[in-house]
Image (tube, rainbow, N blue to C red; front, side, top):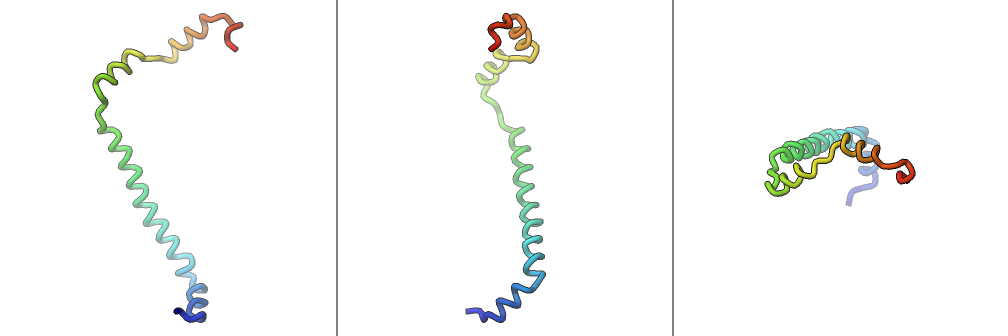
Length: 79
């Protein structure tokens, strides 16, 4: 068991109180950012199923096509 005097001294030590958590945050943040940025690069290399890719190209919806569709409907049916 650690003596109460030692615990009190450790609690008063500013390096242990502020420095160690800051160092853990900086080092841990670096590793975390590396993992998240790696996900971005891994997502680029994923291959899409050819059938799904054909479906996506056939059902291509653009902003202009949606606008024309909404514009052609009467105002009373908008709500």
